[in-house]
Each structure stands twice: as C-alpha cells, then as structure tokens.
Image 1 (cartoon, rainbow, N blue to C red):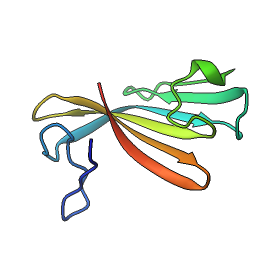
Image 2: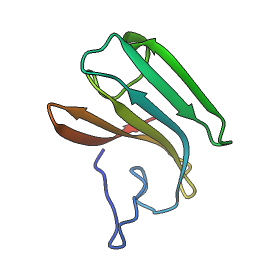
Image 3: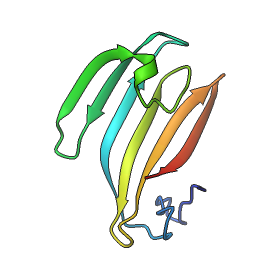
Image 4: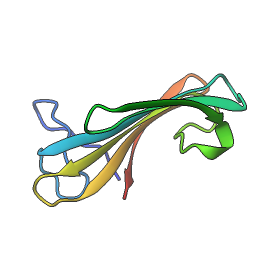
Length: 100
C-alpha cells in the first residue's frame, strides 16, 4: 500500500484516504546487525510497556537484519486497521504499510 500524506503533512488511511487515524500499539525492535537477540519493547494503547530480550527469529521485526519500528493504526472513518513499519537495510530506511 502506498503511503500518502495530505498538504498539511497528515498521514492518510491506506484503506479510505481519510486523515482520522489513531495510533495504538508501538513496537520497537533494537538489534545489532544480524544479531541473534533483539530487544523488543512494546507500548500499548494504555501506556503499558513490556520489554524483553528475545531470539531475533521469534519477533515480528520489520527489518530482517537490524532495528525496526511498527505502529498499529485504526481509522475512525472506515475502521480499517493497518501497521506502519519502519526498517533499515544497508543504510537505507524503508517505510511501509502492512494491512491487518
């Protein structure tokens, strides 16, 4: 899905194109290049935080080799759910939508 923003730099829903997105769960994945362990921090919609050092093969890190971020969104208009991911590879940063 294409990432779209409006003229005021507001992120738009990938499903309906409206600007009424609410972010919910945030996941942060901290990993050295090709590390076998990843520090996974999750912050939920109630501001509860969980942090754990886990095997890199068991987490949903959007980056296959380094750190990454994911932010879950839901749309007030169409009620669609999506996850915005940020990952890096060889010095480049990728931003993508994943539909739920």
